[in-house]
Amino acid sequence: MALGPILRAIPETGQSWDDPSEDLLFILLGDIEAGEGSFLIIERTTDPTGHTYAQALRNPDGSYIVEHREGDAEHHYGTVVRTCALLTDCSPDGHSSSPDGATGPPGHRSAVNLPPARDPWHKVCRICL
Image 1 (cartoon, helix red, strand yellow):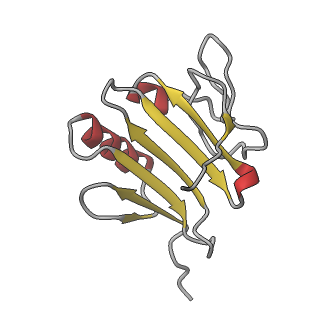
Image 2 (tube, rainbow, N blue to C red):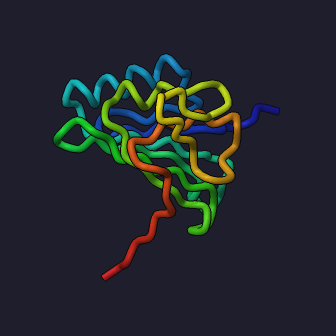
């Protein structure tokens, strides 16, 4: 019995990719740097609510807003990184290798490589109007 995909990469432009390789994720981020879209979402397909994901949005200045959500709103964190290169500059335990020692959001899984933060990870609060 074949299992379905665990992760799905969804760029702003182009097709979605099931269970993307690390190399493909680098390519998709490179496409954003080249001006092909401005964001990439990686969702866990095994979460039926659709609320387990990581996403990166490129700002006009080249920095990225990065969010990680692990289910409910209590586990929704965000930060800003200065460049695309910092999105991939993580040690295997998910902690920053940056000199300032910034770490991933509280309670993140060690198997998830999250980017070092320019600003500390913080809870994301949204006010809907």
